Image (cartoon, rainbow, N blue to C red; front, side, top):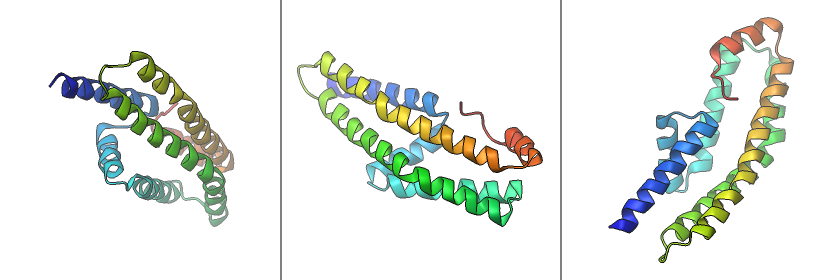
Length: 154
């Protein structure tokens, strides 16, 4: 029973921390968690990203040239995002396994948790780079509209 409670507390803390770090809502996280547990997370993320960029294209009224440039930016960053996401998934699996061992090894948990910071930084940098590159191809009017409509993530 104590093991289950401890696991729930640590998992809850990790979810809340990653929500705070990435700016995700609970519904987004729960959808991603459900997909991840079904080994479908990459597809879900891809579909969610596609819907976001489709909406951005429509709302900002991107030209065909801008749409092609946005797609090129996404494709350029895709391998970086996928690699960092895979590292995070593997790290979470390792962390879950260590958390559930007895006796509890605080140093091992700390080490694995700290190891997670590298792929998180890689993801943050990839998304920031992508946002900056997309921002650069927008007209001043589109930038103004995007800033009003887009959530503040950084």
